[in-house]
Length: 505
Image (cartoon, rainbow, N blue to C red; front, top):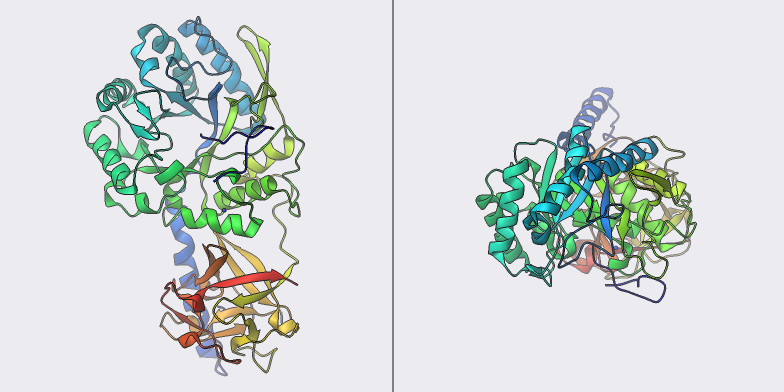
């Protein structure tokens, strides 16, 4: 993890229904087809979901970027393997009992693995975890053999990984993450380095390897689309301080976009927020940027059945308060009698919610209505007359504050939304569930069809509305600026007539 310092710790640094007719048979057939389309779409996230990773990072107090040995908080360099094992079991007992944790992400570096005495001792934390059925993610941090987000000594790096993968390659509970946050590489260069790692370390089974996204592991799209990594898992990081402040919806769209098409193979190996300041992560109406971020991250993880390892359980950057303000737990006790106490119960609950637990109230359906504007003309999405009928077409029109120009975004799951007219209570719908370019947008009684579900794909301060069933975008034909032009779906492109914004009314 990398953070930019500020006086108080860290800065906010570098985001259907089937179309019925007058004939019952037609309606039944169309309904069945729409239902089948919906089933197909929803099947994808369930196939390879990573929710089996209910994890925490156990880090060095001072962070894992070190040119020396890695000694995670609670351990001492003088500890033997038996002592490390006893301390680790005390930590794992509390992680499991308080939050149901079953995964720990531990740092390694060349110095740690090369030091026989400390490596033999440190392995007690790995072995204690796997022997109790925990999964362990071993992730490499910059240590001088890497700097600036790049490997600078390939020989040392490969020697370390050969030792680690030869030792744990046959242990099905151990996973390997070749590099944490490879931000010094271009996308092409990082993908080549990672592919070479897979070819070199053949004792590491690809299904137990996590390849980090580009940048600070914050974008999976290029990795996802590279066939060399089709058999691996993917490591994803997302923090509020990576980006400017966003709304909950914007964060959610931003996260989903950067997962690409590979959320089902992604593990959120780092994400976090302040747990020491009393923030209420259960408050769906909070305007705090950290709360909005954690809630959005949790919802995206839950939607996609993603697992993750929160940053951190223990360790991290102590700042001026002696501990990482993101740390989920306070550590107490002495010797091998270590105890953990949750710093923020609402934060712990929100992470458990991300993992799929039923914890308190789920995110409520929104009550806010929005004016939805298209970028090129500045005009509003508008239900054409007659405004309450099924099949009434939807177009653009100069905004007049009317209820048929106001929309509610209702969560459809998996990062998609139903867009509901305030005036009629009916949903934005691609007519007849067509997948063809030029199919019109209408309103229709809300149902389960994927042609009433739209993804908000961020593009700066604007977003595209992509129909789930077709993958095509809501578009103002020919970029017309005239009132009354009917919206249609077209193949997505960069045109401003496919870019939308929304303003609460």
